[in-house]
Length: 54
Ligand SMILES: [Zn+2]
Image 1 (cartoon, rainbow, N blue to C red):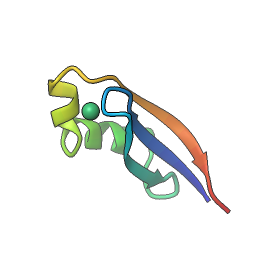
Image 2: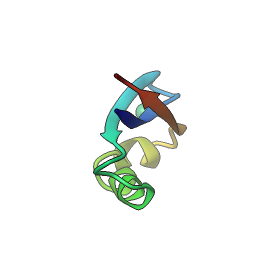
Image 3: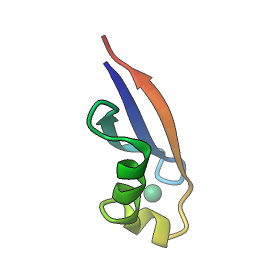
């Protein structure tokens, strides 16, 4: 299975992991602006990376 992993460089942790089957880029952007917005508001650096799990 393939996931998009939302990683906060400032907190040095993974804040969310989303199965690409159910979450497209648009949906993930939406989550960044809602669920993870506190990081962004604090000016944290968020990066999205691919995560593959068998
Ligand atoms: Zn953060």
